[in-house]
Length: 536
Image 1: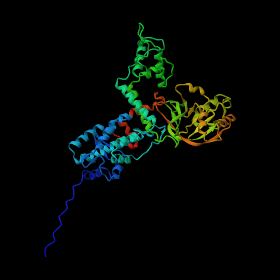
Image 2 (image 1 turned 90 degrees about the vertical axis):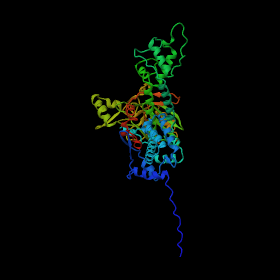
Image 3 (image 1 turned 60 degrees about the horizontal axis):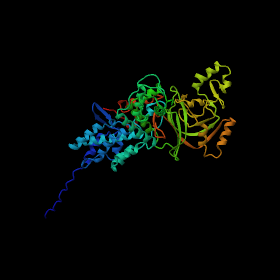
């Protein structure tokens, strides 16, 4: 009986390049789910925390390597990293130079192991850059003891998956940056100041006695050159010469430019060149660039949705001594504030305003009672009665009235720091340029106007009813019909509604640690947990 013919053996197709890389990638990522250590010159660094999750979700298939080698998305990521300075971030936080070198080698002489390694490194770079864009390169809650901002969270692994699946790497990264108008305006300011620095910045004004309008001399000419270099004074602002040199005359156009500069830097707008103004003029352009960079990071610490569903929220800038009530993207009520002294700093945090209290009692905090109030009561007979203070043992409270430290209105938004907004009988402080006088709470310039705004949705609390209740002098608690978020921030650089870049001194010394660690080795202990970096 003839034997049946055997069917030909089908050859199995060779695995694709991505399939070849899958087991290598699986072996490189610990089964524990911890990010792998990636070799670097002089040591190693731990990859981004979201990297294991990203590869696990895609069964360890490479993200940046296709059947024909390195995918175009890799070049798009490199271009995005090269543009990181536009957001105030250093590309070398993501090892751009090393990535470029490895990519060039992978394209010219690809080896399977090298391709797996470059895939890991590109993924790490995307996730690290994405984390920095989304909630900042530095975690303020770790850096500052008086900060509780609860950084925003998002699924960065999902963002990367969407980016590489849809060939939209740059768009995905751009979408992670804050959408707020203030962030975008400060980015534009950064580009402006970088251009100034690239042109050589501005000349220094020599030290010397104060200068005022009508003065003449070389220092006046130096002041003119300084303001011209920064664009604060037009080169032809002064009249044409009439037998002498108008550049060394402190004339009206020069004074107007100096007043503008003083206003931009939170200085007394007296139009004179004193010590404070001279110091601000002589801050180098490169230092202003760094100042703007770190304030961009502060924007990344805030929620993407700052307000309630109606886009209502209160923003307090401690360094600028200013409060804005935002409604529908616009400031509908603006006012000056008095913040904490450098020794009793106002913290950075977000809360939700829930109550207005008219004619509040002031329950004196125990440390203030112990250190200030009780010793004064002991020294000065009649002081307690004069100030409306009620003492029971070591506890002190102040009755409502014209001398009450909280004024006629306070605003509560519960927080761990026990900080609130309130009126003040010390109205003269609002005429000061630098207003750091409180024990940490925030005194506001227009308390009644704020109360009227917050209670406008309650028909029972008309402006007349509020005024009448204050006049009666009884403590009255009112629930705000639509509670709204409050953000207490600290910006030493921002762009105002007129488009002017505002720059301030670092009142609390909060810029210094940011300037010191941003982009350096020390970030390992203060950086966002989603983006821990350890340079090799």
